[in-house]
Amino acid sequence: MQTILKFFAGILSLAASRKIFIGLVAAGIVALNGKLGWGLPAEAVAGIILTAISLIIAIAMEDAAGKKAHAQEMATLIVALIQKLKEKPDVAGTAVGTAAGGAESDGDPVADSIPD
Image (cartoon, rainbow, N blue to C red; front, side, top):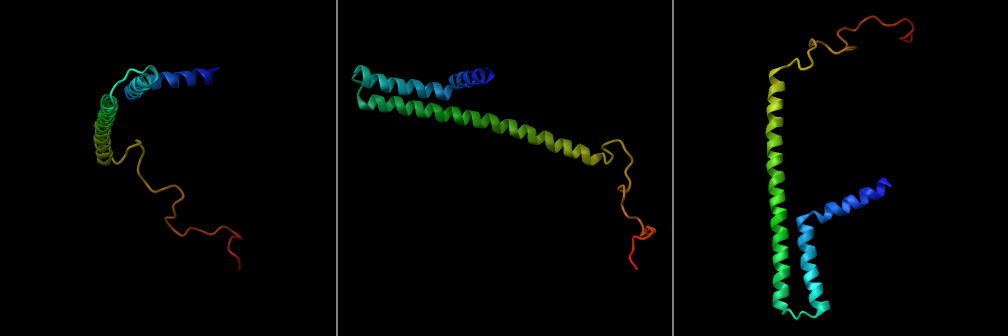
């Protein structure tokens, strides 16, 4: 049941898209012109289609500009965070020292670990 609801929610979200709506209206006008014999001249039909394409491209450019602005804001915040972390070497609040298990000296061999 949930899959069916998600399917219809996806269709409704497509219907809410301005680009899809403009495309459907333009296609509908062209289809109704042919089906109902409205007799619109070819130039008028071409004008409707070109206007729809222009609007769709304009909306896509607007969406891209909005995403670019948001990405630029995020990049600025990330750079500020990196700078803040560079200023504070002890980020986790623990003492900075050698890594656990790191070899500081040769140490003593374990008995029977070195073959004769």
